[in-house]
Image 1 (tube, one colour):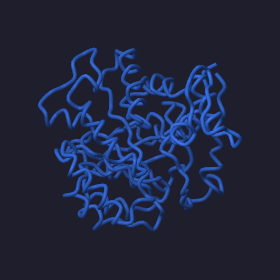
Image 2 (cartoon, one colour):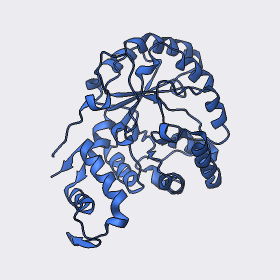
Image 3 (tube, rainbow, N blue to C red):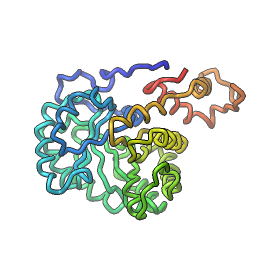
Amino acid sequence: MNVIPLDARALHPGGQGHAHVEPEPLLSAALLGAALYVPASRPDLAAIARDHRRSGARSLIFCTEDAVHERDLERSLAQLAALLPQLDPGLPLKFIRPRNPAVLRRLLRMEGIERVRGFAPPKFDPHTLGDWLKVWDDRHGHYLMPILETAAAFDRRRMELLRDRLEESGLRDRVLCLRIGGNDLLNLLGIRRARGATVYDTPLRGVIADLACVFQPAGYRLSAPVFDRLDAPEVLAREVEADLQHGLAGKTAIHPTQIPVIEGCYRVPREDYDLAAAVLAPEAAAVFKLRETFCEPATHRRWAAAVLERARVFGVMD
Protein backbone atom coordinates (compact mmCIF):
# COMPACT_ATOMS: atom_id res chain seq x y z
CA MET A 1 0.00 0.00 0.00
CA ASN A 2 1.25 3.41 -0.94
CA VAL A 3 0.26 5.83 1.83
CA ILE A 4 0.77 9.55 1.54
CA PRO A 5 1.22 10.85 5.11
CA LEU A 6 -0.83 13.76 6.39
CA ASP A 7 1.16 16.68 7.76
CA ALA A 8 -0.53 17.87 10.95
CA ARG A 9 1.18 21.26 10.62
CA ALA A 10 -0.89 21.97 7.54
CA LEU A 11 -4.02 21.61 9.65
CA HIS A 12 -2.81 23.55 12.66
CA PRO A 13 -0.61 26.52 11.76
CA GLY A 14 1.71 27.59 14.53
CA GLY A 15 2.16 24.17 16.09
CA GLN A 16 0.87 22.78 19.35
CA GLY A 17 2.04 25.53 21.65
CA HIS A 18 -0.68 27.97 20.61
CA ALA A 19 -3.92 27.97 22.55
CA HIS A 20 -5.88 29.54 19.71
CA VAL A 21 -6.20 27.57 16.49
CA GLU A 22 -7.01 29.62 13.42
CA PRO A 23 -9.98 28.28 11.46
CA GLU A 24 -8.97 26.03 8.60
CA PRO A 25 -11.55 26.59 5.86
CA LEU A 26 -10.28 23.66 3.80
CA LEU A 27 -10.67 21.04 6.53
CA SER A 28 -12.20 18.04 4.81
CA ALA A 29 -14.71 15.51 6.11
CA ALA A 30 -12.45 12.79 4.70
CA LEU A 31 -9.86 13.61 7.38
CA LEU A 32 -12.30 12.43 10.06
CA GLY A 33 -11.91 8.79 9.04
CA ALA A 34 -13.59 6.50 11.54
CA ALA A 35 -14.65 9.03 14.20
CA LEU A 36 -14.46 7.41 17.62
CA TYR A 37 -17.23 8.33 20.05
CA VAL A 38 -16.01 8.66 23.64
CA PRO A 39 -18.44 9.19 26.54
CA ALA A 40 -17.29 12.31 28.39
CA SER A 41 -18.04 10.48 31.64
CA ARG A 42 -15.15 8.05 31.16
CA PRO A 43 -12.59 8.28 33.98
CA ASP A 44 -9.76 7.93 31.43
CA LEU A 45 -11.06 10.74 29.23
CA ALA A 46 -7.85 12.78 29.52
CA ALA A 47 -5.67 9.78 28.66
CA ILE A 48 -7.72 9.02 25.55
CA ALA A 49 -7.50 12.65 24.46
CA ARG A 50 -3.72 12.79 25.04
CA ASP A 51 -2.65 9.58 23.34
CA HIS A 52 -4.35 9.04 19.99
CA ARG A 53 -2.01 6.11 19.32
CA ARG A 54 -3.96 4.28 22.00
CA SER A 55 -7.00 4.14 19.72
CA GLY A 56 -5.54 4.94 16.33
CA ALA A 57 -8.37 7.41 15.76
CA ARG A 58 -8.02 10.34 13.38
CA SER A 59 -10.92 12.08 15.13
CA LEU A 60 -12.58 11.89 18.55
CA ILE A 61 -16.08 12.97 19.51
CA PHE A 62 -16.54 13.50 23.24
CA CYS A 63 -20.20 12.70 23.89
CA THR A 64 -22.38 14.34 26.54
CA GLU A 65 -25.65 13.08 25.10
CA ASP A 66 -26.99 9.52 24.82
CA ALA A 67 -23.72 7.92 25.93
CA VAL A 68 -23.90 9.80 29.26
CA HIS A 69 -26.54 9.13 31.91
CA GLU A 70 -28.36 12.21 33.18
CA ARG A 71 -26.90 11.68 36.64
CA ASP A 72 -23.37 11.78 35.16
CA LEU A 73 -23.82 14.93 33.08
CA GLU A 74 -22.37 17.42 35.56
CA ARG A 75 -19.35 15.21 36.23
CA SER A 76 -18.82 14.85 32.48
CA LEU A 77 -18.93 18.61 31.94
CA ALA A 78 -16.55 19.11 34.86
CA GLN A 79 -14.11 16.64 33.27
CA LEU A 80 -14.30 18.50 29.96
CA ALA A 81 -13.77 21.83 31.72
CA ALA A 82 -10.62 20.46 33.36
CA LEU A 83 -9.37 18.85 30.13
CA LEU A 84 -9.90 21.69 27.65
CA PRO A 85 -7.14 24.10 28.83
CA GLN A 86 -4.54 21.30 28.48
CA LEU A 87 -5.99 19.77 25.31
CA ASP A 88 -3.62 19.37 22.37
CA PRO A 89 -5.30 21.12 19.43
CA GLY A 90 -3.47 18.85 17.01
CA LEU A 91 -4.39 15.41 15.77
CA PRO A 92 -6.61 13.61 16.34
CA LEU A 93 -9.27 16.17 15.45
CA LYS A 94 -11.48 16.67 18.48
CA PHE A 95 -15.18 17.48 18.67
CA ILE A 96 -17.85 17.53 21.36
CA ARG A 97 -21.39 16.24 21.10
CA PRO A 98 -23.41 18.59 23.33
CA ARG A 99 -26.46 17.14 25.03
CA ASN A 100 -28.70 20.06 24.07
CA PRO A 101 -28.42 23.79 23.24
CA ALA A 102 -28.11 24.71 26.93
CA VAL A 103 -25.08 22.44 27.27
CA LEU A 104 -23.58 23.90 24.10
CA ARG A 105 -23.91 27.37 25.62
CA ARG A 106 -21.97 26.20 28.69
CA LEU A 107 -19.30 24.52 26.58
CA LEU A 108 -18.74 27.63 24.48
CA ARG A 109 -17.99 29.59 27.66
CA MET A 110 -15.36 27.14 28.91
CA GLU A 111 -11.69 28.08 28.96
CA GLY A 112 -9.86 26.25 26.19
CA ILE A 113 -12.92 25.53 24.06
CA GLU A 114 -11.00 26.91 21.07
CA ARG A 115 -8.82 23.78 21.29
CA VAL A 116 -11.59 21.56 19.88
CA ARG A 117 -12.42 21.74 16.20
CA GLY A 118 -16.18 21.82 16.61
CA PHE A 119 -19.40 20.23 17.77
CA ALA A 120 -21.81 17.48 16.71
CA PRO A 121 -25.26 18.78 17.73
CA PRO A 122 -27.74 15.89 18.07
CA LYS A 123 -31.42 15.69 17.09
CA PHE A 124 -30.84 18.26 14.35
CA ASP A 125 -33.86 19.08 12.18
CA PRO A 126 -35.89 22.10 11.00
CA HIS A 127 -37.65 22.28 14.38
CA THR A 128 -34.47 22.35 16.52
CA LEU A 129 -32.27 24.40 14.18
CA GLY A 130 -33.48 27.68 15.70
CA ASP A 131 -32.66 26.51 19.23
CA TRP A 132 -29.09 25.68 18.22
CA LEU A 133 -28.69 28.99 16.38
CA LYS A 134 -29.75 30.95 19.46
CA VAL A 135 -26.68 29.76 21.39
CA TRP A 136 -24.21 29.40 18.51
CA ASP A 137 -21.05 31.49 18.78
CA ASP A 138 -18.66 31.40 15.85
CA ARG A 139 -15.84 33.44 17.38
CA HIS A 140 -13.40 30.51 17.37
CA GLY A 141 -14.26 29.25 13.88
CA HIS A 142 -15.66 25.94 15.13
CA TYR A 143 -17.07 23.43 12.70
CA LEU A 144 -20.46 21.76 13.01
CA MET A 145 -21.37 18.14 12.35
CA PRO A 146 -25.16 18.10 12.87
CA ILE A 147 -26.67 14.68 13.50
CA LEU A 148 -29.78 13.68 11.54
CA GLU A 149 -31.58 11.29 13.86
CA THR A 150 -35.17 12.48 14.40
CA ALA A 151 -38.41 11.50 12.65
CA ALA A 152 -37.84 14.44 10.29
CA ALA A 153 -35.12 12.39 8.56
CA PHE A 154 -37.84 10.11 7.17
CA ASP A 155 -39.55 13.06 5.47
CA ARG A 156 -37.74 14.20 2.34
CA ARG A 157 -39.61 17.52 2.28
CA ARG A 158 -38.47 18.36 5.81
CA MET A 159 -34.89 17.47 4.93
CA GLU A 160 -35.12 19.76 1.92
CA LEU A 161 -36.40 22.47 4.27
CA LEU A 162 -33.45 21.85 6.61
CA ARG A 163 -31.04 22.11 3.69
CA ASP A 164 -32.58 25.41 2.62
CA ARG A 165 -32.57 26.81 6.17
CA LEU A 166 -28.93 25.86 6.59
CA GLU A 167 -28.20 27.86 3.45
CA GLU A 168 -30.10 30.85 4.85
CA SER A 169 -28.48 30.60 8.30
CA GLY A 170 -24.99 31.41 7.05
CA LEU A 171 -23.63 28.15 8.52
CA ARG A 172 -22.84 26.57 5.16
CA ASP A 173 -19.06 26.98 5.47
CA ARG A 174 -19.09 25.75 9.06
CA VAL A 175 -20.90 22.46 8.34
CA LEU A 176 -18.10 19.93 7.96
CA CYS A 177 -20.54 17.09 7.40
CA LEU A 178 -23.98 15.86 8.39
CA ARG A 179 -23.89 12.68 10.46
CA ILE A 180 -26.60 10.04 10.07
CA GLY A 181 -27.75 8.73 13.46
CA GLY A 182 -28.65 5.21 12.38
CA ASN A 183 -29.46 3.68 15.75
CA ASP A 184 -31.76 6.54 16.73
CA LEU A 185 -33.57 6.23 13.42
CA LEU A 186 -33.92 2.46 13.83
CA ASN A 187 -35.21 3.04 17.36
CA LEU A 188 -37.97 5.25 15.93
CA LEU A 189 -38.99 2.27 13.79
CA GLY A 190 -38.84 -0.07 16.78
CA ILE A 191 -36.29 -2.35 15.12
CA ARG A 192 -32.64 -3.31 15.43
CA ARG A 193 -30.56 -4.82 12.67
CA ALA A 194 -30.17 -8.58 12.93
CA ARG A 195 -26.80 -10.17 13.41
CA GLY A 196 -25.17 -10.43 10.03
CA ALA A 197 -27.25 -7.59 8.57
CA THR A 198 -25.97 -4.21 7.49
CA VAL A 199 -27.94 -1.01 7.89
CA TYR A 200 -28.74 -1.34 4.18
CA ASP A 201 -30.71 -4.52 4.95
CA THR A 202 -33.17 -2.39 6.93
CA PRO A 203 -35.67 0.33 5.96
CA LEU A 204 -32.87 2.88 6.45
CA ARG A 205 -31.49 1.97 3.03
CA GLY A 206 -34.05 4.23 1.39
CA VAL A 207 -33.63 6.93 4.03
CA ILE A 208 -29.87 7.09 3.48
CA ALA A 209 -30.37 7.24 -0.28
CA ASP A 210 -32.85 10.10 0.12
CA LEU A 211 -30.49 12.02 2.43
CA ALA A 212 -27.69 11.58 -0.09
CA CYS A 213 -29.89 12.90 -2.89
CA VAL A 214 -31.07 15.90 -0.85
CA PHE A 215 -27.78 17.08 0.63
CA GLN A 216 -24.89 15.89 -1.51
CA PRO A 217 -25.80 17.74 -4.73
CA ALA A 218 -25.92 20.92 -2.59
CA GLY A 219 -22.32 20.32 -1.52
CA TYR A 220 -22.90 18.82 1.95
CA ARG A 221 -21.01 15.69 2.98
CA LEU A 222 -22.74 12.88 4.86
CA SER A 223 -21.10 10.46 7.27
CA ALA A 224 -22.28 6.91 7.84
CA PRO A 225 -24.10 5.41 10.84
CA VAL A 226 -22.45 3.35 13.54
CA PHE A 227 -22.20 -0.43 13.25
CA ASP A 228 -22.95 -1.78 16.71
CA ARG A 229 -21.53 -5.32 16.52
CA LEU A 230 -17.93 -5.76 17.65
CA ASP A 231 -17.55 -9.40 16.56
CA ALA A 232 -18.50 -9.19 12.88
CA PRO A 233 -15.72 -7.30 11.06
CA GLU A 234 -16.67 -8.90 7.74
CA VAL A 235 -20.21 -7.51 8.01
CA LEU A 236 -18.83 -4.11 9.02
CA ALA A 237 -16.60 -4.14 5.94
CA ARG A 238 -19.58 -4.99 3.75
CA GLU A 239 -21.51 -2.09 5.26
CA VAL A 240 -18.64 0.33 4.65
CA GLU A 241 -18.51 -0.70 0.99
CA ALA A 242 -22.22 0.16 0.74
CA ASP A 243 -21.54 3.47 2.54
CA LEU A 244 -19.04 4.34 -0.17
CA GLN A 245 -21.52 3.46 -2.91
CA HIS A 246 -23.87 6.04 -1.35
CA GLY A 247 -21.13 8.67 -1.35
CA LEU A 248 -20.80 8.78 2.44
CA ALA A 249 -17.52 10.12 3.87
CA GLY A 250 -16.44 8.83 7.27
CA LYS A 251 -18.21 6.54 9.72
CA THR A 252 -18.89 6.60 13.43
CA ALA A 253 -16.90 4.01 15.39
CA ILE A 254 -17.87 2.85 18.87
CA HIS A 255 -14.68 0.88 19.58
CA PRO A 256 -11.05 1.19 18.48
CA THR A 257 -11.15 -2.30 16.94
CA GLN A 258 -13.55 -0.99 14.31
CA ILE A 259 -11.19 1.73 13.11
CA PRO A 260 -8.75 -0.40 11.02
CA VAL A 261 -11.66 -2.29 9.46
CA ILE A 262 -13.42 0.92 8.42
CA GLU A 263 -10.34 2.77 7.26
CA GLY A 264 -9.02 -0.29 5.46
CA CYS A 265 -12.09 -0.06 3.24
CA TYR A 266 -11.29 3.61 2.57
CA ARG A 267 -8.01 2.70 0.87
CA VAL A 268 -8.50 3.25 -2.83
CA PRO A 269 -8.16 0.35 -5.30
CA ARG A 270 -5.36 0.97 -7.77
CA GLU A 271 -7.76 0.85 -10.72
CA ASP A 272 -10.01 3.54 -9.21
CA TYR A 273 -6.97 5.68 -8.45
CA ASP A 274 -5.69 5.43 -12.01
CA LEU A 275 -9.12 6.20 -13.46
CA ALA A 276 -9.60 9.20 -11.17
CA ALA A 277 -6.16 10.59 -11.94
CA ALA A 278 -6.80 10.23 -15.66
CA VAL A 279 -10.19 11.95 -15.40
CA LEU A 280 -8.65 14.94 -13.62
CA ALA A 281 -5.55 15.16 -15.80
CA PRO A 282 -5.35 18.58 -17.53
CA GLU A 283 -4.76 16.90 -20.87
CA ALA A 284 -7.70 14.47 -20.52
CA ALA A 285 -9.88 14.06 -23.60
CA ALA A 286 -13.58 14.86 -23.36
CA VAL A 287 -14.33 11.12 -23.59
CA PHE A 288 -11.86 8.25 -23.38
CA LYS A 289 -11.51 4.58 -22.46
CA LEU A 290 -9.15 3.32 -19.79
CA ARG A 291 -9.00 -0.26 -18.49
CA GLU A 292 -12.14 -1.07 -20.48
CA THR A 293 -14.00 1.69 -18.61
CA PHE A 294 -15.78 4.66 -20.15
CA CYS A 295 -14.49 7.96 -18.75
CA GLU A 296 -15.99 11.40 -19.27
CA PRO A 297 -14.40 14.17 -17.16
CA ALA A 298 -17.48 16.39 -17.39
CA THR A 299 -19.60 13.77 -15.57
CA HIS A 300 -17.01 11.91 -13.50
CA ARG A 301 -15.12 14.89 -12.06
CA ARG A 302 -16.71 14.93 -8.58
CA TRP A 303 -16.26 11.19 -8.19
CA ALA A 304 -12.63 11.46 -9.25
CA ALA A 305 -11.91 14.31 -6.83
CA ALA A 306 -13.40 12.29 -3.95
CA VAL A 307 -11.32 9.24 -4.89
CA LEU A 308 -8.06 11.21 -4.94
CA GLU A 309 -8.97 12.83 -1.64
CA ARG A 310 -9.44 9.39 -0.07
CA ALA A 311 -6.16 8.25 -1.59
CA ARG A 312 -4.29 11.19 -0.05
CA VAL A 313 -5.60 10.34 3.40
CA PHE A 314 -5.88 6.53 3.44
CA GLY A 315 -3.54 5.40 0.68
CA VAL A 316 -3.82 3.24 -2.43
CA MET A 317 -4.06 -0.54 -2.56
CA ASP A 318 -1.36 -1.93 -4.86
